[in-house]
Image 1 (cartoon, protein in one colour):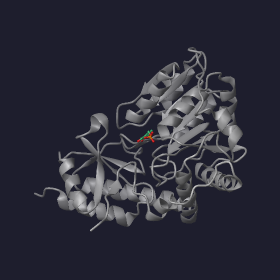
Image 2 (spheres, protein in one colour):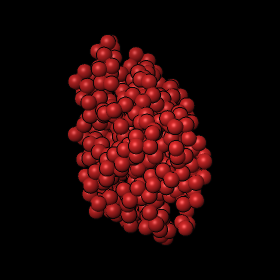
Image 3 (spheres, protein in one colour):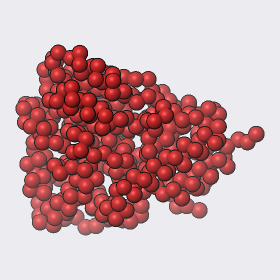
Image 4 (cartoon, protein in one colour):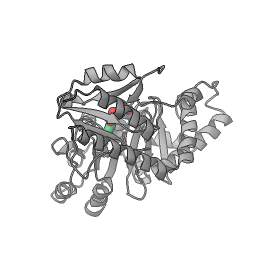
Length: 365
Ligand SMILES: Cc1ncc(COP(=O)(O)O)c(C=O)c1O
């Protein structure tokens, strides 16, 4: 029998024992040389994952903190500019709300659940705009619907039609599991959380930030305190952080970045894509549907349409007996969908075991 429940949930995910153990090291001073060496090594590892030559801030918060950071540092208070929020599910909707609650002017462009944000609608919104938006924000991988947005094409349209508008991307459930090429795709802020495709415990968040975004932040007077990009940059240059960092989690991150490099990022992304195919095939073979539209299905989480009307709580009770669990549908999609995450360090063999156990619990005939 297993000693714990292996989570096939879209965060927190199963964390390997080696990574959990890395958190148990002795404390060091975060104002000493040893910390600077650790933080510099982490910075190099993060830049490789985000494919940026610039900087990746490390925040002691979950991803939501960096939603707020992007709102405060990248969007000014001029209502004639504001931010265009592309919405395709609950998380993108919440980020739009974060901008609003920080007093920013928000225009929302949304699509029905299950669809990706289309480039042509974005282009039309940019063309008809008298004053350019300060930023366009979207979610690369909508964890509530299993939709993977066309991020390179969205960014390209913005560069062509509104070159001064910043591109803010939530890659919370994709970075580390699917490619996000910050510099090559011209993205200004790419943020993620530790507890998803990085296969770490929750508690850290990362944001790749461009020079353009930093220059914008410098023009904005009320950036707040904890998530001030200018302050984070000043300390990062010294391989340090403005406030006390979560040392135990940083040790786990250091271990994990080394293992991600050893696996190789292309191999890591191919593993996620293979697991997405396995899950999609399983869903269709077992009489379920796929909630996300074809061509926009996530490689890291599959949202399964519950066409058979199964009771997920009963399935999870059965799965718990063999040490596994999957996730309910999110928000309004609870009951009509359920979610199987295949992210982080989950291997195809682990997923195969889950799908086999799930099938055995399904009513037959
Ligand atoms: C796409 C997306 N964005 C943002 C969040 C919020 O992240 P956190 O819970 O790390 O604050 C989540 C959480 O599941 C998410 O899936």
